[in-house]
Image (cartoon, rainbow, N blue to C red; front, side, top):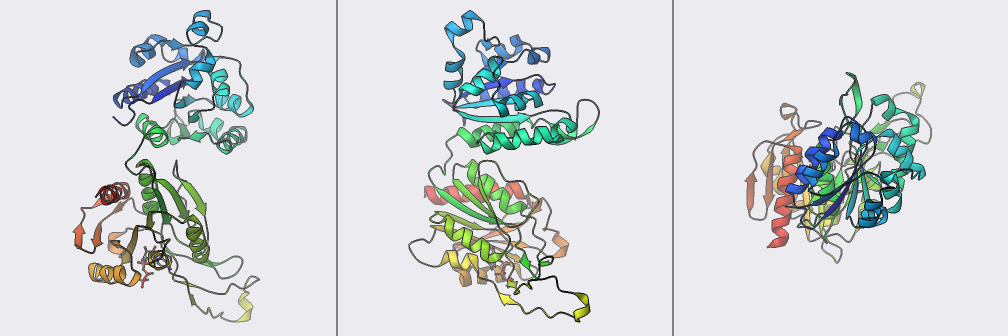
Length: 397
Ligand code: CTP
């Protein structure tokens, strides 16, 4: 019951994905939320007002000119009496209206009249989603602080495949929880590093490693879901920015350290990035082949985990590192915990046989001052959730 006392105004626009919104209503109610719904005219072609009314247990709002609607609940009150306004599905048409501020029916008027948090779950044909116009509208909405969940890639209503499927009800629920629920880490600040770093050799080449950023990003997302105000300092990855997390994108180890120091003070720091241990002084111009074999002089990069772990006023209360090892996993990880001065270390085997890099799964061991916990093989998301539970317990103790 994560949404007790939370009020959701759900705007349902006209897309086939509207049938999934009925399931979303059920799940929101299960979590204790009060749900009011506005249906656009087009939405009523896909779901009936009666179905929505039955599931919400509330009158369904449709018509801006209905006198009874206005006298019982004007569109301004409707929008203001919610903690969050969720548009699911959000058609290309509604996103366009929101982007420019058109208010020509109850749904778009309520969206223009609210200063509450807005979450959109786009759903449309992939060509409509990829169209420059839609992308520009979404970018404009995001810039205004409107949150977006999905769309997912998969088979679409017309038998085609591509990005445009509305996020699943559970994903939308999770995004709503992230935005309005009180988690156990509410009021705490967390910093997470993720991904590889790139160290320039010249303007076109760099030193890098195989880190995908999946584990670090999943941890940032899990901490944010638990209510922590989370900053993610990410090296170059293909992972999307997690919802509800402030993300700083950096390239090199030195940039990552600078961004981490700027994010202090925090109570929780998780260093999951595979920071390049060495850098070179980058050549100002592209190194040419005809100049003979180049020699790269490696210099050591700053150690971010060790820097954050140093005693001092700004030391986070809980500093967690990762130990990526290809042999003697536990022994090396224990030594690393001591050498770097962090509180916990998550040891993971990155030998080729484990194919940890880029994969969705991870087998890890949590090492603290008391010893070693062997965790079962889990998905990276589950590892993130387990680690977050341990962090919650730490602060509860
Ligand atoms: N780390 C860091 N800054 C660095 C190198 C590593 O913050 N310059 C952090 C990583 O984010 C991780 C931990 O230190 O949390 C251990 O990283 P790992 O790559 O396993 O170890 P290294 O310190 O690089 O040591 P080695 O390469 O010798 O195993």
